[in-house]
Amino acid sequence: MPELTLENIEKISRDVKKQDITFFNLADQLIDHICCDIEKEMEEGLTFYEAYRRVKQNMGPQRLKEIQQETLYAIDTKYRFMKNTMKISGVAGTILFGFAVLFKIQHWAGAGFMLTIGALILALVFMPSALGILWKETHSRNRLLLFITGFLTAMFFIFGILFKVQHWPQANILISLAGITGLFCFLPLIVAYRLSDQENKPKRPVYLIGTLGIIFYSAGMIFKMQHWPAATILMLTGLIILSVIALPWYTWLMWKNEKHINSRFLFIVIGSLAIIIPGALFNLSLQYAYEDGFYPHQQQQQELFKYLYNKNSSFVNIYKDSSGCTEIEKLHSSTNGLISIIEKIQVKMVRASEGEPGKPAVADEQILMTEQGIEIQYRMLTRPFNTGPAKDFLLPGCTSREELDKAIRDYCNLISDLVPEGNREKYRTFLEPSVYLPADSAENPGVSLMTGLHALELLKNGILTMESKMFNIIIREPKSV
Image (tube, rainbow, N blue to C red):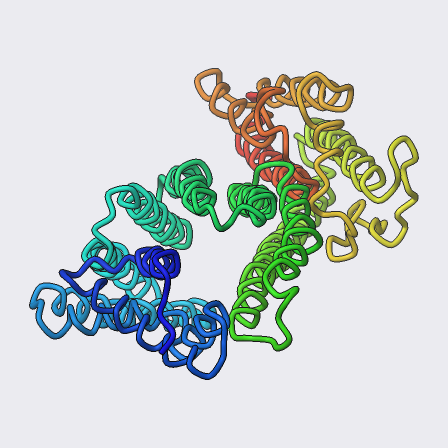
């Protein structure tokens, strides 16, 4: 009967220890059992490495860990309790999260409650029990920090998503903490653990490149959720690194000598899709958020503008022969002039966004002329996320903003003469530009086109509301004019 050399036994011992077999005497028993199986295979004329490969294929990659888990489950009451807790809480939290998403999409009652309970179960029950099981199965102090940082990353991320969906404060802080612990603590520890394995020397470069791709992609996701600039560039860079370089390279290293596809290849493909598909859906979700959120709001503001404009115009016609007709027409003319300045800014912003840098487009499809003035066709905009126009035409210091601020000051001076002295500051504050537009050139430098246009729509309706109020004051108190 063939016998194994000391070098062969050491090779088997190292492989068993890599499986984190820590239970008392179990590792020695498994090593002895594997050696016997290899010797039986070698009786058929196989070399040690051929026999060892066949034994490992027969056992499966996770069989040694499963044996330890079964042993612990059978004799360790605490381990059995934590294992059952992890299973139940993991299933319950996931189901609650799934139903919460469904209820949220359908706008049914109870979505927020289920989302909150699901997050609490996953973060405060499932994650701690999983951490305890990992420690129980490995007893590796070197990997304890890895487990803790993974636990913190998952907990911050779960609560960050919960707070974000529920519109609670501090959501951005939690998501940022998840990104910091994940990218700068958890991920580097995983890479260090993989690089410390001497048998992984040929794979070290691909591990480093793959880590770089994950960092870029994850940072892009966080930037996207936080509405920070350069999110798309980061995500695209990460995807290119992962899908074009890291994944093909790793696949070649793993299976260049394999004749058949095994299950690990399928897991890598599924894992890659798990990265790409959620990212694509997340971006589509943000894109549709404009359609489901901004567009109806813009249209509502446009309808309100038409109503206020027609109402004020009718008021002017009705009181043409009144004692205050001169003041009414003067105010109405000033209002139209101010709104005209705002609409010119809107036109400039749309044309700049639809055209190329330095070459504004005509944008006839996006800008229509009506009896009340211009009407922007928001659903026709091709670049609603463009941040250039708001920066060029709305931030303090630019020519258009200075012209608008001066026109608003002149308008406020006009209405100040129409109201009692004690109420003048209140009315002036109502049309303060900083209420509607960025107050500082360093504030919100990434304001999108849609956000800027929405702010101007609100400002126009605020002006018409103020005009209507002034009309009533003129009619009620003609002596104060």
